[in-house]
Length: 389
Picture 1 (cartoon, one colour):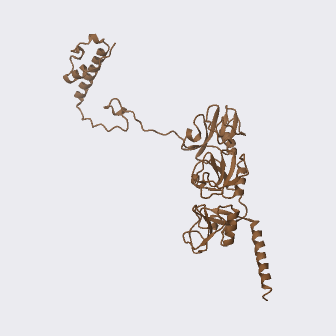
Picture 2 (tube, helix red, strand yellow; picture 1 turned 135 degrees about the vertical axis):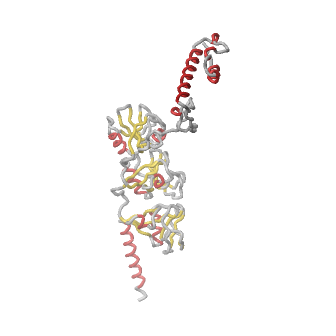
Picture 3 (cartoon, helix red, strand yellow; picture 1 turned 180 degrees about the horizontal axis):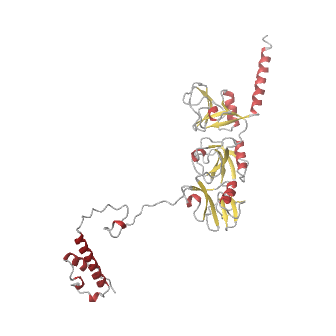
């Protein structure tokens, strides 16, 4: 009895081994940065409860740490997880309700393939701390194989990534300087998405412009966003054609290239040719000869600035600015007094005009043109400016 037990044990181990690897053929591992659990984040994913498989998953994902530390933590997600992009952990505290997070990413086993679903697409991000920070419906691509698939879908010039652990580049899948595809397994990196290292993200929904966006031609500005803060450069080659069609341009099928003398992304050259520049290192601005085609939100209407013009006549309410203090109310006057005041104003105006039309030498100190007016009107008349001839 004792002599047959080791053989039976070996047979059981062999069966488990082959079942395990058969399962790997139809499944893959994935990092989750949100969700109450693996299955909550994605219904086709599950938590890894086996300590040995935790190490195997870390190896498959090319993480920096492939040998887990075990513990019972209530502040971390249960099962296999990766902390701060540095340490592999295995939490056997099954009572924990801590969710997956950026600082403690769940390592999950998922069935099927990582290809985007019908309601998702890939997108390049040139700003934001991460894909989800740039757009809440987008997520970082942590799988090396999917990084290549995304680059192919985006028709990038490089579709085979180089892997590395870089603290100066965003984690996951990114595109450097419009030339090289990279996959950063350094999960501790906090480098943001940027023009020089564009994050390749997986986003839900469609890439078509929404009801609150439109396309626009820019003839000046260092870039679309520099010309208008609510506009952005079109980095997707397919969208470049769609934008040209929406704008009814004469050319709606772009020619691609890597040009340092033309603006990056989608542009219209000499009013004739549609171009798509994947040279992301270009700093050429939008211009008349190479107009940037930009995607803008509907809030691109000109800003209404507060008027700083002050009325010249502060007693004329109709010419006053809305920001001026209100005038005091004018006391009512009898009708006869009002008529007399109007006559006096006309006389004053005629006298002032007569004096202004004379040479200074003919205007004496008595200001004879003011004679016959009321005393308070004469003082106003005598104070008229003298215009040199």
